[in-house]
Image (cartoon, rainbow, N blue to C red; front, side, top):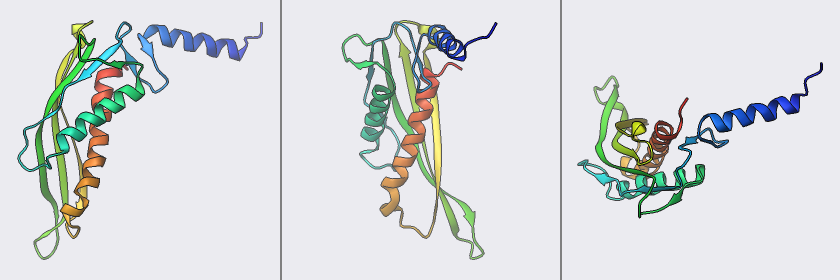
Length: 168
């Protein structure tokens, strides 16, 4: 008996889509009955960060979730919610040159995120997410801060999204 490859692929996709709640081709698996999400403003509790960092993280998380899932934004009775705070924003030297000064610096951001699934409380979590980017100490930090923040925010948002919606 010859097995049709197209039928096999269709069957495989069907199994995957029913097995993990709602499966999207981005690799995310959102809860089956979830229709809405709300992202509270991420608070800035760090001492050195730029004032707009809080808003940038909130907006990027919001946009990423809305673009990668079928969830709709709803402040009233959302099925899922995110809240949190920026707990660390540090610049530290990581490489010292022969003149005993830093040749490389590291910008690190840590955010504490609380994810609440009102439909299935077992998947709720409160976690710290951190990431970093290295840059040359010869560069003017003020001039590249926005670019570095954008790079770090992207990494953090992907980590938060994966922790929330990737049940591998």
